[in-house]
Image (cartoon, rainbow, N blue to C red; front, side, top):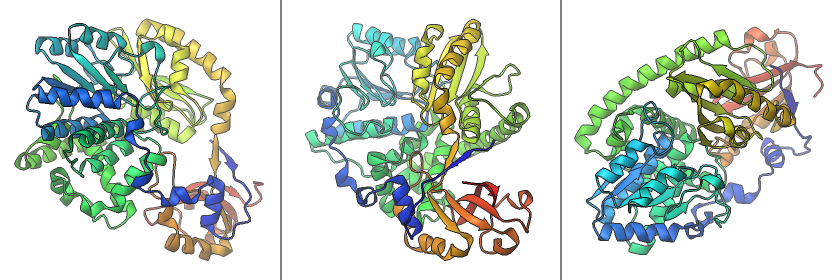
Length: 523
């Protein structure tokens, strides 16, 4: 697919100043620190939740944390679970549902567990804000529920919980609503610590960074400050799990290596789903040191199998996906080639390449699961709300969402979704572009070297919402310039003696080829 190239002409001399102008980056972005994070007391219901948890611990009540089985949910479950122990609780548990067994949200088996085992308090992390019926049922038999979440709030599905901490609530005064589920849990812990005087383990901040990066929340504002603090003070974290993982990590001497280490940990923790609310990743985080080595070895073996499955799925998708797609893509896995847990990966694989909304659907026993990924400006939750009459349930984020549906309703759902696509066609088309952050001529490569030496780290950490800058090099002649700037996977596409305009990124000390046009292409 050929994308439009988009950039604003700049008179700025340095590459860094061009990037700042094009991204509208001010000094506050570059110089922000932990002191610039809005106070957590601005989160709606945080005091109600904190005081109820303190009361439950003092009264030796039975507490259970209901987490989500992704890395955001696991890290949120872990830091809250560990802090409850530091508060003095000896009667708290966790339950992480397996998405391969349980449907999304709080299901009947968990409700029955809470009732049968006589829990007094349920705390959800990274979920629960749309579990109206389930939480109503739990509250009805005398168990309080506190919801901590960060997903989009659907007012008609808000549960009657004792407290709901979610920065996306309309009446929440916390000014940054895009924090991850683990970030919400962390701020709740901070508030409890403030009330009780019990110190927080500094290592919790490391797991906040892991969960935030894994959930692909924008690395802007509060998220960027939290993650940057971890990357800047990397050597100060001495968590026992991190220590056990250290032989498998890079030395961590720069931002790129530290981000690679976090990505490795995310891949490892993405394995380990179990039964009856158990999860091997959670066990790794809370278990004693001697057991960690065994668990790490087991999870590394699982990771190898996981990576092999990803390779097979990529290979399969390349045989099934047309080279040129329209404004959206829906794929029904009728050949049963994509496991349920990889539907989201498959959607991301296509969205990242074509910049369009993508849904992968798979059925089992008359019920289908859909996982979707959306492009910039396109809100999947709003799209599914438009189609909700045909869905059993749905939820998620603007750019990553899912649903369940009766298999018999898939065709009518697709028709309805196509209506929504038609109404939002302009937004999708607008997104099919490459935004260029800075332009240099092939004879000005010293400017790029200066940027790498002086300014490269000032914009880090890079991630969702703050991607690696894209550079346009003008008049690049392969036979003349290749020894200075080598672009991987580009040699076979370009003639040695033909000048080109090339878009590239710089990452991990190497240049990544993005797109190119012959020199006569008009920008």
